[in-house]
View 1 (cartoon, rainbow, N blue to C red):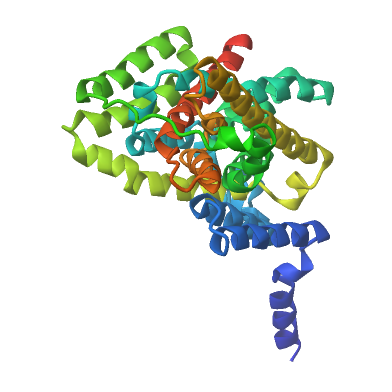
View 2: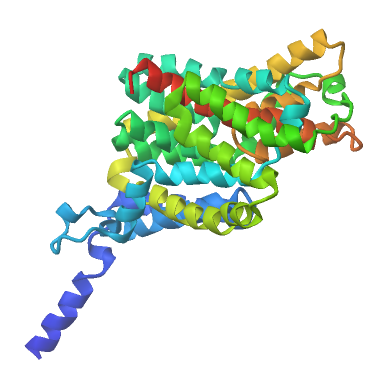
Length: 382
């Protein structure tokens, strides 16, 4: 009987109930909230479902992301190896390739002024950088945190790794992806605050047709120009444009389909679960994380507002030909931010079609956030 009792006692003590802290329960609750938002509300489920599940797993079984040095058998946890691909900048770069293969740059080519709107939306990044300095972050940590304002998870992970801020990578990535998913909630009030009913109802002229030659030359020219000026952006900008060249060249259909489908979804699973697994209670429930989350939100709000305000300025300059709402799409959340521009405009006039116009600033924002990351790396001599 003593053997049976001891065996049952060992089994009981191997359950998670004896090791979970109040913080673990809090993070498990947060994971449930994320799953609810993803499944019930449809907020970027491709991102939130794996992130939330990784969050759930690590707070029940922390060793799932333990390094080999932390385990008794010298073999790391499953998600440790997934996370290593984040730290090595492999997964963020592959995500960019997939985004490029999925994205039509035609609206940006047809309306080059979209580059300015995409650049204006990066204001939040540099504004948050100085705020982070004031809150006590060192210069590299401030840069890694501020890039959240671009609502670009892969770039946030990429820059944190390059600047040696792997300790902050988890909170930064979760904040960036969370704000990407919450674009439909965060952006509309800001857009309506800075625009009038008449401005939101402005109809824009149809974009000119873009030739196949232009679409083929665009990724080649952008890669050459941007990467010559900021060589450190090559892993992101280069993979983004390579994916787009797969799409537009018309001669590598298999590569385009693989990059935009099978490879993209595999990478999202690996990246999402590993990012979620960085949110253990010990790592996530602290003042530094709260500062990161708050700064990321402020940066994202500032970026949205800057894009809309610059859109208003262009509206005045062009005599009312540009709807300021498309400026909010200058953040990198493709294509969610463009859809939000369309939705808010359609609320004023159901016949108003802004989606393709908003896609120009949206894809410009992807390039702009990568360039902002390159600027920070250049400043710090990375």
